[in-house]
Length: 451
Image (spheres, rainbow, N blue to C red):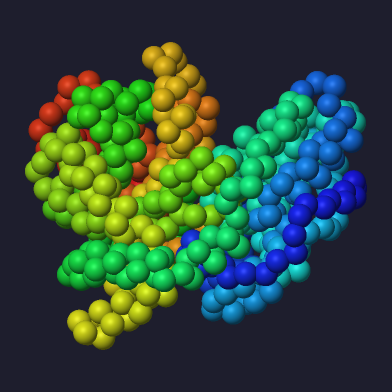
């Protein structure tokens, strides 16, 4: 065990951000089994890197990023409200003997442990060893202090430090305490109230639930990921043809998947807005993501038409993607009472694309390895969506991860669903036309999976 002392600036207490409260809403019902939401990864180190070199990197990263040395004194309550930044402290970093191929498995398993964010740092580090020689730095971070974009910023900074460079520490760096204070101002409150009108339009839809009828009495979220160079290239080709971003292409594919599985002409979906528009926001190791929603008409439309509609909806998301979550919760309660609903209205389909614009721009025509991975089932998932498709970057390629609740969705083989999305994109890029739902149905039939 390596004991590392760090010191990095100020002791300060301030309000939590709207995005942090969104995260808390999702993970609180599952605690202490919320580790599935943790950010976790491993970064290989260069030959010759010593334990002391890695310890210096951990010391520096803890000093630079306030979120990594933040605790939440009211953890356990329905609302967090307060976060407390500490100027200094000590973090214990284990050195673990692992075979070279065991590092990723260790990162996945070790990173699943929930954080006691009231009493411990919301970040953990471990040094992977092979025959006593450091091979990787393994990292796990609570979702309260890093979303997927914050993960990318953290990985970038750690790689820079491990290669002997320093990281940006400009005075205008975004902090969670600063963002929370800004969101308490009249200007941001006005933005939140304007967003409510957009939310009322979407949440007022009569059919937000896509998968309504239960097939069993037990919730089981089956998970798998598919790293697909073919889908990546196909999505970029379609995006260039339709003149949109590939993010819109993948989101449209999720909409077509949900519509085909549910035999519906339209589907309501939630997605996530990064809320990172400046250099300092892009470099922020924290959580700024908030949901937005749309109702997507699939019907007998072609895939390019659906992509255009999705892209138009995503442009409107900027007017509903930054808001006080408790304003939206109040609106949901009001709609429930007004419409006599059994529960406050919300979506059961979620799509998220956490790829960076830089990663999308580097896609080549080269070939890469297609990798399919089944992940452990979840019996608790506080976010509660019946279908969740996430697209993230692994190198230059898109990794399609599917969560599917077999209680409501059939077929519920997540790998078959990810492969069907892949096939839809490949076929459309190759010239397949006609209704997108028919192309998806054919792909689902060919990919199989339990029904």
